[in-house]
Amino acid sequence: MGQRPSITIGRAGLTITGALSLSELEQLRDAFDSLAREPSEEVTVDLEGMEASMASAEAAIYGGLRKLRQAGARVMVRAAPDGFLERFEKLEKELCPEARPRLRSRTFSWFEDVGDSVLETSATLRGLAAFGINSLLSFARVVFGPGKLRWKEAFYYMEQAGVKAVPIISILCWLLGTVLGYMSGFQLRDFGAETFMPDLVGLSMVWEISPLLAAVIVAGRSGSAFAAELGTMKVRQEVDALEVMGFDVKGYLVVPKVVALLFVMPFLTLLADLFALLGGMLIGGWYLGMPPEIFVQRLAFVLLPIDFYWGMGKSLVYAVIVATVGCFMGMRVRGGAAEVGRSTTSAVVVSIFLVILADALIAILFMYVRPAVTV
Amino acid sequence: MRSGPGGSPELIRVRNLRGGYGKLLVLENVSMEVLEGEILLIVGRSGCGKTTLMNYLLGLARPWAGQILYRGSPLVFDGPSSLTAVRRRWGVLFQSGALLASLSLLENVALPLTEFTELDASEADLVAMSKLALVGLEEFADSLPLEVSGGMQKRAGLARALAMDPDVLFFDEPSAGLDPVTSGELDELIRRLNGDLGTTMVIVTHELASIFAVSDRVIMLDAEEKGIIAEGTAHQLRDSTGDERVSAFFNRRPVAGGAAR
Ligand SMILES: Nc1ncnc2c1ncn2[C@@H]1O[C@H](COP(=O)(O)OP(=O)(O)O)[C@@H](O)[C@H]1O
Ligand SMILES: [Mg+2]
Image 1 (cartoon, chains in turn cyan, brown):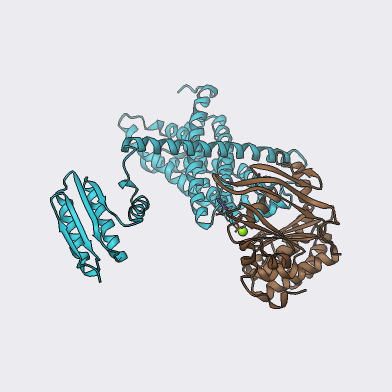
Image 2 (cartoon, rainbow over the protein chains, first blue to last red):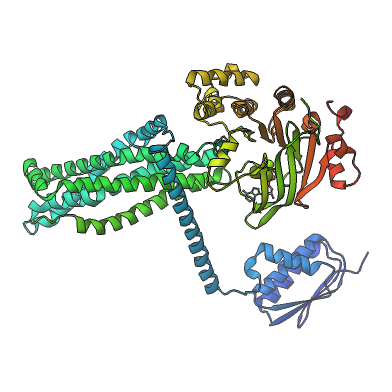
C-alpha cells in the first residue's frame, strides 16, 4: 500500500499526496472550494506525491480545477500523471465550452451569430428561389407542354385547401367585418360621420384584410399540410423512389398543389370579402341604425369592381407563395421524422412573412393603378 | 444465365468517384464496374458509404468528382432529360420499400406503367397484377402499404421495381428489418429473377447470409479507407488472408456449410 493520502492547502495552492480514495473526496472538494472562494491570482496544484488514484478522485480534481479557473485563477498543475492534463483539456472542451480561453468576446460571438443566421437565411432564400423557378418550369411543362396534370390530385387538394376552409374563413371575416364596423362606427359617430363606416369597412376589408386573412388561413391549414406530406414522403424515400422511376417529381407532387391553390384562393378571397361586408352591414343596422340598403348604396359608391378583382388577383400571388413555400419546406427535409415538424413550422412562418411582404409591394402598385373615387 | 466476371460487357463504370456530405468526405477515388447480368454485392460495415455510393449510382446526388458511365455514356445531372430516360430502364428497391402511402399496392405497381407506357389502365393493372403475383402478393393488391407488413411492403416495392422489366435492379439493404425466413425468400427471388430474366442486380447489404446466398461478385467498402478494400467472390474474400478487415467481416459468424451453393 502506498503512502497515506493527504491534502494540504498551502500559501500558493494545494498539494495532494498518496493514493486518494472515496473517503477523501469530500475533503478534496472542500479544499478546492476554499481556494476558489478567495482565489489568488495563481494557484499551483501539486500532484507530485499523488499515486495512481481512483477515477472518482481524478474526476473530483477535474471539478476542482474547473472551479478554480472559473473563479478567475490561473491554475498551474505540477507533476500531473501521464495523460491527466490532456484528459482534462478534452473534457473542458466537451463539457463547458465557455471555460475555454476566451478568444472571442461576447460581442464578437453575437456578431458571429447574426452573421451565421444571415448566411443561413440567404441560403434558404436562394434555395427557395431555385425551387420556385424549377416548379415554375414544371408548371409550364405540365400546363402548356407535354406533361400530364394529375387532375385527380388537384381536385383532392382543392377540396382540402378550399372547400374545407370555407367555414373558418367565413366566420373569421364576418367577425372582423363586425368588429371593424363597430369600432369605426364608434369613432366616427363622435364626428357625426358614421355614414362613412361602410367606406372604412369596405375598403380596408376588400383591399387588404380579406385577401390577407384568406392567405394566412390557407398557409396555416394547407401550407403546413403540404410541408408535412412531402416531408413524410421524403423521410420514407418515396420521393427518391419517384425520382429514380423517372418521374418529374415537381410536376408530379408540387404542381397539383399549386394548381389547386390557384383555383381556390380567389374564391376564398371573394367569400372573405362578402362575409366581411355582411358583418359590417349587420353591425351598421344594429349599432348605428343604418338600414342595410343605405350600407349597400354607400358600398356601391366607394367600391369599384377593380377592388374585388384586385384582391382576387393578389390572392393568386399568395397562392403561389403558400404552395411553393409549403412544398419547398417539405422537400427540404433530410433527416428523420423530427425534421418534418420543424419543416411545417417554417412553412407557415415563411409563407406568411412572404405573403405580407408581397402585399406591401402590391399595395404600392395599387395606389398607382386604382382610379380615385371622389367622396 | 450466369455470367462470370470477365466475359460479359460492362453496364456501369465508375471512375475515380469522390463524394460526401458537406465537409465529410465519405468516398475517395472509387472505381468499379457493374457487368451485364451479374449479381454484384456492395458490402461493408454500417457507415462505410454504401448508401452514399448507391445514391450516386442512381443519380440521386451528384458526386464531388469522378464519372459514372452507363453503357458507355456519362450520366448527365444537369437537365432531367437523359437521366430520366436511363432511369426508366432501372428498378430500385429502397430500404423501406418506399411505396406511395396514398396508393394501393396494385396502384403503386401500376404507377410507372400508366405513366411511362402506352398501356391503358386495365392493361397496366393486368401487368401490375402479374408482377404482384411474382412476389406472392396478389391477394393484397387492394391493400394500402401501411396495412401490410414491412416484408410485404418490401416485396411490393420489388414488384414495382420490376414493373418496367428493368435492365438493372438496385437494392438497398433488401433484408434489413426482415425476419430470416422472409429475407431468405427474398434472396431466393433475387436469384430466380437473375436466372430467369438475366436482370443485372446491384445489392447493398451487410447481411452475411445474403452475401453468400446470392452474390456473383462482392465489393467491400471501408470507412477508414473511404473506398474499396477488396473485390472478388464471397468465398475468395472469406478465405483471403491479406486484409484483416476483410476476413474479420466475412468470418464474423461461421457460415454453415460455406453457404447455399
Ligand atoms: N444526409 C447525410 N448528411 C450527412 N452525413 C451523412 C448523410 N448520410 C450519410 N451520412 C454519413 O456518411 C457516412 C456514410 O453513410 P452511408 O452511406 O449511409 O453508410 P452505409 O449505408 O454504408 O451504412 C456515414 O458516416 C454517415 O454518417
Ligand atoms: Mg445504408
